[in-house]
Each structure stands twice: as structure tokens, then as C-alpha cells.
Image 1 (cartoon, helix red, strand yellow):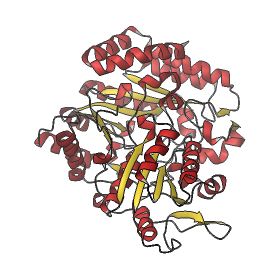
Image 2 (cartoon, rainbow, N blue to C red):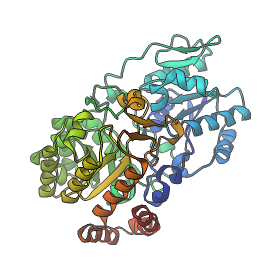
Image 3 (cartoon, rainbow, N blue to C red):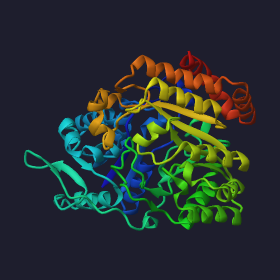
Image 4 (cartoon, helix red, strand yellow):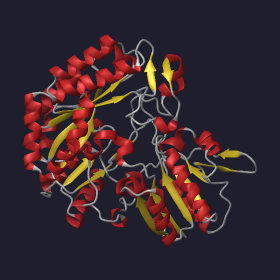
Length: 469
């Protein structure tokens, strides 16, 4: 069989608004991993990362028509699910014999609802997809019944059938590396967010799956609430391949929490140093996992930035969100990073269920007094699969419109706050942080040292200034 793997055509403007020139066009890691499995099984595979390449439905359809696949496999988040379905319907009109598969966070969180709402999807892959996809494609290729396949949702005799959940992969190192070789123009045609790289070209990887925390705003629909790890040798092998075969100089580690298993992190750093791999890299981590010895080792091995999900400057808000950190940990982590020479980025969310003007002022004050190098401010979005999604209607005003659930839109307004207040504090936080001499100087220096960043900075400056008004 021939399989076309596609990400929905949700462009930079739709994802980042006025800040589109500063946004990311990195390809979906999930798409690359699933395509690698299909290729390993002997299927002919095409990857079309439409969102990264800026393709519209018409141009995607042309490529699919030329390839003539037997299956169209789409991975989609919640805000992209409508675009995914429009594409599936268009392909069905092109050739109704093509089997359309849908995977990703949205179908995993709401399998029955998604299939009922979108008739253009034939089969949904629920939760972690590699083993399910392998078995499913084999059965489709041999024209065998799909009913025994765990981890799928499909259309039975007049009803939606949701099969038993498939067990998670125990040994992640048995998976093939992501299929970067199938990406058109990789790596030079893809770029990370403006604040996430020192050198180009860049690539993103994941080195673990799942998260053990209980935050009310995070979905565990795909990989679950138990964390599993790729081995240090496997991770280094990906890095080495990216550097030596593709010339990648910057690696973004996109794990939810890279430092939760510190011994493995040490082993990865040691392999980079031992083999003198010339890369710079960044990661995400919890503030309570930051320790000086491991951060110093990370710095030596090329790590230049850590992103911390701090979320709020109010301890009361963090406690209700089940974040399981305290602000003292956050301040300590930033100080350790500063001492070791690693840049820090803080992620913050406005509009928690118990946010008030006072807690938003607490967040503004925390950011202003911090030593963070960058921040990201978004609005609380109760995504399907989260605890907050099931309770959002009782905790505030919630517009349960999947297509609007990007971090740019305000779909949840907690009781006691207004849409105007949330917008006001979003602009206020960004203004107070970025329009400071030391931050402006740091950005000017980064732009001078990176010509690629210079072009994007100029293009994004006008949008940034309009966001700050």
C-alpha cells in the first residue's frame, strides 16, 4: 500500500496571529515517527507537513493526487481538527476509495464525539499510535477485518465502535528514528520559534513520552500519566544523525520535562561531550528539577536555554491548578540557571479558574522581578482530555468551540474576570517585560549574532508592537 501522512493546513497566521513571522514551522514529530514505522513495515510513504510548508488544501490535494495513496493519515490537534476534516472530505471527493485515518490529541481525547462530528474520517487511532498503525495498515493491506485492532475507533454497522485501549510501548528504543529523510527541504526549510535557537539549521526531537504530573490544564490523552524514556544512547544517536547527515546545528528537546530522570540527562550530556558533537540545544524542565551540577554539565554539552512552565505568580493559583511547584522553587531555578550561564524562558497562562485582578498583578510582579530572558504569555484554554475541560462550564464562561481553541483566542473567562481584563493583562505583561533596556539590548545582541534571526525580527517587530498597544 501507499500511505500519505499529512498535517492539516493550519498556517502561521492562524496559529500565531500578528506574530506569525516569529512563529515555528517545525514539522510534526508525531507525523515523522508514524511515517518511519510505516516505511519500516515496507509501505511506500509520502509526508506532507502542510502547516510547515504553508500549503493550502488545493495544493495538498494536488500532491496527494499525484501520489495516489491507498490511505491518508492525518495527525491533528484540537484547533486544527476542522481543517483536518475539510482535507479528508476533499480527498474523499478526489477518490472515495482512499481510507482516511485521523490521529493525535483531539481524537484521543474525544474519540466517539470526533467520529460522530466528522464523517470524512474512516478510522481514528487513539492514544500512542505506532503499534496500532502498524497492525492496522497490515490488516488493511491484506484486506483483513480491522475489528480486532486495539486502539482504534471506527464506523461499524450504523454505530461508532471504540475498541479496547492498546498498551503503551514498553521499550521506546525499538522504534525507528523519525523519518527526516522523507521531508522535502529538510532541515533548511523548517525553522523554530524566534526565541528558541542560537544557530541554524535546527530540528526538534522528543526523548521521553508522558508526564507524571496532574496539572488540570494538560491533556494526557496520547501518552498517559506515566513517563517513559528513550535511552541515552538512542537519544545521542538521533542527535548525531541530525548533525552529521543533515548538518543540523541546533536541537530543540520537546519533552514535557527533560530533567525528571537526571541520571539519563547526565548520560546524554556525557555522550555529547565524549564524542565532541558540535551542537547547541535547549529543553523544557520543571523548576523543582533544576540543580546546579546537572545544569553546569548541560551548559558544557551545548545547552543554552531552559524553558520553565511557571504559569502564574500566585501560589494560590498554582495550588488550584495542581502544578505541584512553589514560587520559591521557580526563583531558585532561575538563579541556578543564571549562575551556570543558561538562558531561561518562562511560560505563563492568564485566566485560571481562580485568577483575579490581584493574582494577575502577582504574575506581572513576579515576571518583572525575575531574571528570565524570555517569556510566553497565553490564555487558559480548557483542551479536551484535561480536568479543566470537564469543569470549565461551572468555573466560568466557556466557548466549547474546537476551532477557536488556539492559545490566541480567549475561550474561557473565569468568574470575576472579563475578556477585556484578560487582554489588558496580556498586553501589560508583555510590555513590562520586553520594553526594558536590558531585554531590548539582549535581543539586539542576539539579532546581531544571528543574521537569520535578523530577518525574522524585522518582519515580526510591527506585529509585536501592535500586540503591546
